[in-house]
Each structure stands twice: as structure tokens, then as C-alpha cells.
Length: 506
Image (cartoon, rainbow, N blue to C red; front, side):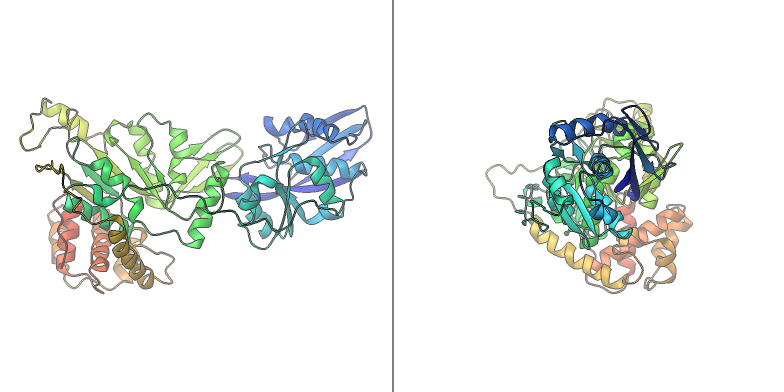
């Protein structure tokens, strides 16, 4: 007696259908599980048997062989429990096998028959739809997440008894989950609360408008962290495609709670973060790191010079390609990591080097060693550098005078719309991700390239730096409502690249 059910194996962002075959008979009572399972999956034998008995159903008292196909594909996780239990019950005749042919299942079983939530439901069901599945059975607590996938009927089950009723054609839950209330958005600090630093706020606006990487440096207490924490408040909402992609990454990490993620995410790890936590990894279960959880959002490294060099160098490839690739002996997982990097640093260990009126106690060699912790290749990948100076006027008792985040966000939104219109059909939506070939050969040439040529001749820019300046100059033109890049835009972009004061271009 044999039967089969379907589940999904997740490798990075990619999912592959796994057929769970169950055969009963031919030996002493025991359970054999084959097909490259990891430890959590291998223990499903005991979980499923206890859950079936807990639901007052009979587990076969013969040899039960469970095969996971394709056998050469490594399989990890506890989300195969529903498929294993269904295949065994169908092979023993407890449930009809009809619905199992085109139904994919994801869910973990408790010993008492409860169905628990699992990670990766969203990308797993997306892969199932692509493979032609028409139905899915998931934990009832994850119906909202599963409902984000179009083109597939969803059943939610809370217990193994519910699963049996669904397979017998008597579902106890609705196929269409009730719409969940939108979670209350977390409050983002307002840009208007930052006193002074108007030029730094403009640099932040340019970074937001073009999705450019930003380096803020200056003495302690000048507002570097305050500015960085307010960047998400001036970023536009994610597009539907971006929101689904970001939500899928968070689902794989087990951090998707509720519906679609529609706002750019913000990650700010401490300097003692591990390499695996930052870029992702693991042995049998490969999970995304913070650079992927910040996909289409902001990755903020405060006191970046306190991070170890191997952590910073690990950012080189995702900064350039927008992807993280994690290779293992039996598999290779890829996660998207097109984040916006914002880093902040003091000028020296004591923080006072080069500060007007400051008393630096560091030796010249100590200052140099400290600055060299951020390598040239990483620094070359950052579009905008800005040095903040201390504010010399107190603001006690006065009302905030700066622009609110909402006012700045409106200008950023208009600039993003101009970019999307100009880049339509190229596969890109913002200036910060446009490749150099497109900048030089497809987009209109700047009206006057002499500032750029002069900087290149003097060795002030690398070949990558030329593209960075061109991208920022296009963003300045978009903020100014211009259709071409002028010499003033190039000069200002060059100044922002070199860390000089930035004023609004005409």
C-alpha cells in the first residue's frame, strides 16, 4: 500500500516541489525515512506518529517507509510534517488520496496533533504555483501570509483532525481567510526634530531620492545617528513587486508576522554582529542575514570603524551586485540584498580630530590607522560622503524649525517618479542601481562634462567613481525638476562624492 503527498524544499529564495511517498508493509513495525533529511526532518517520524495517535487515529503497526523525492536534493526543516502524516494516512486507507495529487502542504505537527507555524510559507507557495499546484494546506495561523500568493486555493488547519476533515472533503475552515487588520506602523522619528545640519539633511534627501549609499562622519554628538534613523521616514512605499520580494525574504527568516511588508525595512546591527548574522548562512538550513532582511530598505552601520574588517569586506559583493550567494557542498543558496547602506563614524578614536575647537589626543598614526579600517574598495562603493560639524547654537525653548519628514518625502517621491519614467523598460527604477553602460550610452549626456573630465584627469576619481558621480548628478537633476544634467549638478555631485559641503543645485 502506497500513497504520496507534496511539500516544498527551500534553498535560498528558490523552492522545489518534494514528493513525499509512503509505503506500508514488508517488515517489522518501524519507520524508515530516506531522501537526505536533516535532523529536524528525521525526527518527523516520531512527531507524526505521536500526532496521529493523539488525534485518535491509527498508525500502521507494520514497516512504514517514507521516501522524499528527488532523493539527491538536501531537505531541511519541520514543515514536511503535514505531508508525511497525510501520505501515511492515505497509504493506510484512513483518508482518500484524491486531493493529495495537486495539493502542497507545509506545517509542523505537535505531539498532541496541533499544527504549528513554519518559516518559508510565502516563497514555498510561490514555487508551488509555478509548478502547477492548485491547492495548499498551511497552518491556520499563517493564512494571512499564504493569502498573499495569487492563483492557489488555501486551506488553513489548526490540528491534525482538521487536516483529516479537509482530505475527506469536509473542511472545517473557510478557503478565503478573513482580512486581517493592518498592523499599526512603527513610529519613525521625524526629520524636523533634528536641529541645524541643513546641508546634511539635504545629503540625506539626495540619498533617499536616488537610493544612494551614504557615509556620515564627524565628532560625537553632531547628529549622525539621528539623521540615519530618520531616513526610512522619507523613503517611498515599496512597489507591489518589491513588497512581495521583501516579505518572502522575511518569511524564509521566520520574521513575517501578518500581511505584506509595504515599508522599507531598517537594520542597525551592533559592531559585534557575527558574519553569519550579517550576510546569512548556516549548515543544512541556510537563512538570510541582515543584509537580505534590509533588502529594498536601509542597512545602518553606526560606528562603522569599530566593525571588524572581514565583516566590512563581506559587503563588497552585495553592494555591487545586490545578491548574496552562500555556497555549501551540496547546494548553493542566493538571497537578494539590494539594500541602501548608511555608515557613520568618528574621525578618530577620541572623536575630535579636525573639529574646530576640539582637543584631539590621538597621534597622527592612530588617526590614520583608525580611518583605514574602512578600506578603499568599500569607500569607493559609497556614493555620498558628508562631514558633519558641531552645531554652535542651542535650541532650548524654541520650536522645531526644520522641514518635516512628510515634506521631504513628497519631494523624494516626485524624484522617484521622474526616475521611474526615465528608466522605464530598462529593468531599473532608481539612479543608484543604474549600471555604467546605461549611464554612458542610453541616458542623455550631461550638458557640460568638463567638471567630471577635470576630476578624472587629476586622479580625484576612479572609473567606478565617475559612475557614482553621474548617478548622484541625475538625482540632483530629478530633485530640481530638470530633464538633463548640468555642469552645476556635476560639480555638486562631485563635491558630495568628496565629502564637501552640499548646497541645493539650481
